[in-house]
Image 1 (cartoon, rainbow, N blue to C red):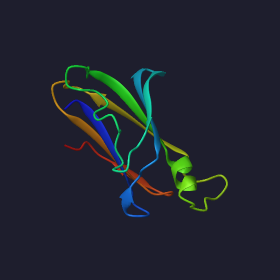
Image 2 (tube, rainbow, N blue to C red):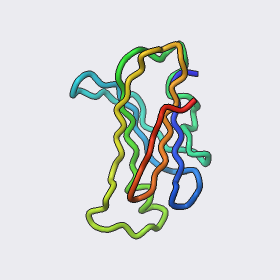
Image 3 (spheres, rainbow, N blue to C red):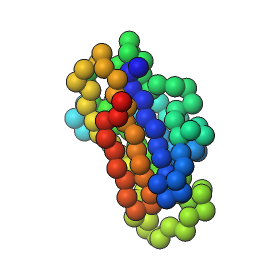
Length: 117
């Protein structure tokens, strides 16, 4: 199961297909890019889990979601500067044998996340 993410566009009530996302490992202030991808029609990584159980390690990670780029591509008139540009979520994995699902519920003005199942 490993690590996965899913993004829902709460403004339009649908998955955030086409949103650009980047995954990093972190060590203090240093971040190392692991993977950059574009969400599929279901708002998920088209290649499946970001890490499988065998590859996920205890440590800290960052997911960066290009919220402004996504909503601009949807034709949403955003103010300049827009309220949300990129949403960056820093999180820790304490148990590599468990599944970590990091969903993002997002609009141009708000977001919410949690550890999903």
